Image (cartoon, rainbow over all chains, first blue to last red; front, top):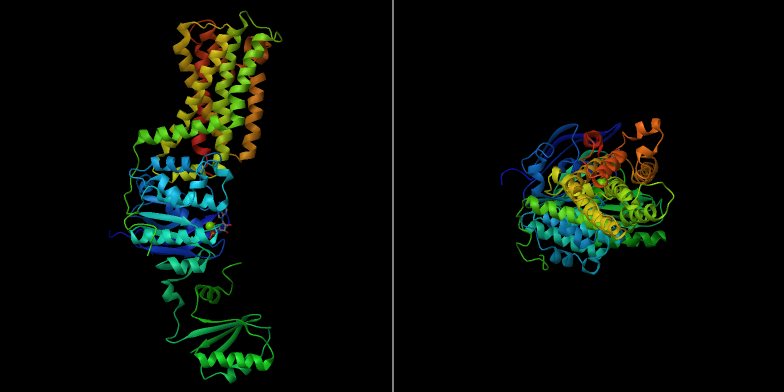
Length: 308
Length: 259
Ligand SMILES: Nc1ncnc2c1ncn2[C@@H]1O[C@H](COP(=O)(O)OP(=O)(O)O)[C@@H](O)[C@H]1O
Ligand SMILES: [Mg+2]
């Protein structure tokens, strides 16, 4: 168990003139969950497909379960589970039939009927793949990734196109995998997903790692620092608000009409902000107090919203 | 934390399935998908059946008597071409579009099995087609020479592999819609101008020379020799099929893409 599940360093991969991945590196330990978090086009899928052995890196080192995914793919594939981003079944195949086929490729598969049931696919087990909804197709794809009892699973945007209920199920599944010692590498552009699931988050943008760490490390700031956010009409004179607040509080307007107060946010600060807004004759909407989120981290690092 | 899943449910126990089991599971899926697909059944069964009855009962094309003995080998050749070439190319084109090859390539299924499963599935469908077509021909009074049976099996397997390789070459390289169009056009051209409906001996000399080099003509000629004349197939027909199959197969290993 000493070799990590995945170890990537200085990975570079281009498609013609497009550099999709420009020097990504990270490490996923056995039994841990790592999230590659980034906006569309960040290079997440490319990175994952290199790890799965589907793409040959231009340069860099990639070891998966101690193996080279390109040259030792035949030895690696029986040990991993793969959920690609979209697709992955014959257009006319019935959901259960597809899962049974993938199960037949494994030495000790889970019971396909049980997995179909757990994933809420029992009602469409005999439906041809092309007539399944996007969320059902995603769940079948997830089942195919798990059926062979792998040591390591790759989940590329596992909850894309799923309703909140199915998304919670997937989160629960990832938790169960982790508890049973399965390593999980997932990609997502949802910060709450990365925050909820991952031991280690790697934020990628434009093919590079812009930050990494545990969710707690990434969102950490000064000891008692907190944030108060509210929405109001844009262009308020924030200097006036700073003057009204206790020493050490800062006020910014990161995007028009969005205000952010950082510092030691105690009940007094909240009441001062609302009183000040009342004095200005504006309504403070969506007022909330909380810690820095991964979304804030992303915004601060790249100057852009994660969700476009 | 996870109420729905008892601890240890997903405890890793990885490993590849037994090769025979993987091969049979893959081949069975391929074959049943073909037989369940209405367009494929039209292509592989209904059109050959219609042609068998048409050639035998309608005196449009000049055929030696008994007409059914001349029609059967042509229809068998067509059935092989329809399944192994057109059907396989179209299925592969759309399977790639749907990410099936990538899905299966990500399992423990070795690469050779990925091909072998499709080939075996295809052979199963061809066998079924020929049984149905032979039964229909028998109804029309066909009585083949038993001596030719072994050669028939050899030619049918060889023809399936050759047309299958051509089908993979086409279906593995281009966009699904382009594959669909091309596979149907090639099928139609080979049917009427490739030595199947009109065998090479009915064609003008200059054209016959060229058409004889096509796998469709070779398979039809070979099957006619074996079934109607009860002789071994001319060596040229076997060589022609082998050359097309090997060439297409080699080329396909370089051009076939997973998606
Ligand atoms: N097959 C491909 N051919 C050309 N460019 C590609 C291909 N796949 C991805 N790209 C480009 O590479 C970049 C990274 O894509 P991808 O790895 O899919 O990112 P993500 O999964 O984070 O959305 C994007 O600019 C994308 O347009
Ligand atoms: Mg992606």
